[in-house]
Image (cartoon, rainbow, N blue to C red; front, side, top):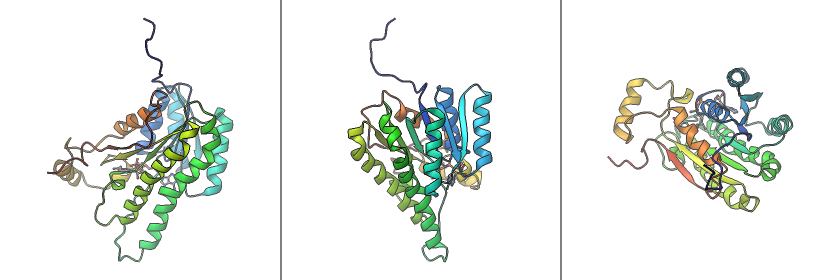
Length: 259
Ligand code: NAD
């Protein structure tokens, strides 16, 4: 039957750059976009991990290339972004996913250093990645920015102020980019994952995870990285052309649960 609708729900043939793609949600997102026919630039501080993910995608018949990229390094961002453009002939979708935990008590000697690291990796990195990618995203027919913040970008947990402030910054950056880049047709959206089973949370004992989920999460469990990847894919679709500036929890109902 001929199609009756006009908009496309496929990222096949698009070029996507996913930062922090050697592990967790970044890796799941890289696999998903590759499955959907996108060319995937897999970047990570962990060069061997990024290479392993790209190799797995290629072995499964997908298109991927790995780069070592520390998102706290301004020069590397420009160099790698340009190399991605040269390799794949442009860039359509940027997923700012790389992240670390930067918890420290306010009275800790380590606080200043943790704060600075959090700002460098979690806010300044994404801002620089967007600016380095801007010419290519503007040239794309469907330029998309998806920032991975956290439920810490909406509320706050004890002892996590540097992380909380940085993730609130990601929320602010997302909204500011949506407004500034609307005239270029680029959308900017943000996902706020709740508790997800990834490298970031693997040190938390299973019993503590279960207790937290039963007490705080409507779906009573931690999420899977792929469940977040699908939300990211939705924002990246050509058909998602009128959604911008959205801050979307993917948290199993953590933020709406009162008791
Ligand atoms: P993860 O540790 O499994 O993956 C994070 C990846 O980022 C790793 O491969 C790591 O090497 C990479 N990375 C760290 N610092 C980097 C840097 N400076 N430059 C480039 N890459 C770097 O963790 P994850 O949970 O998949 O984290 C992905 C994103 O999700 C992060 O932004 C994190 O803050 C956010 N997040 C995670 C959770 C959760 O429960 N896991 C919840 C909310 C938000």
